[in-house]
Image (tube, rainbow, N blue to C red; front, side, top):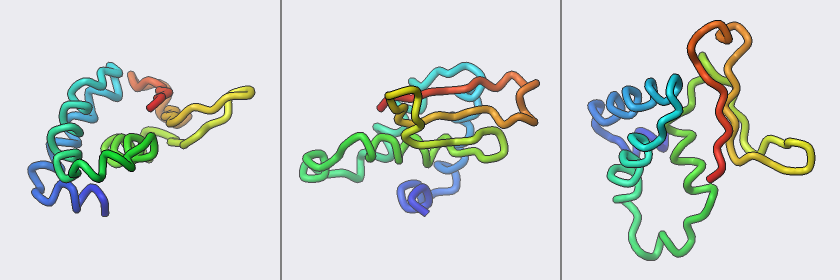
Length: 106
């Protein structure tokens, strides 16, 4: 729902999907970061930036990268005594593909 509100045009939704596909194989976040800055954050005003935090950034990435066909996605995954902001673990049935596992710190 958030993605549809922030990207009302079908072409923008398709563009976000096209940007996510190469990321799954290369891990290059820059095109997604540029897209988030230009499309998502343009709806924020200066007052919003005062309360924006890690959850704001994490939600933006989740809405663009969420793909439950390829990944098991988890927020605040525990690693020993620490936590990762966002993990994307390739599903067992997809592990023979070129997809990579990701750990994102926002």
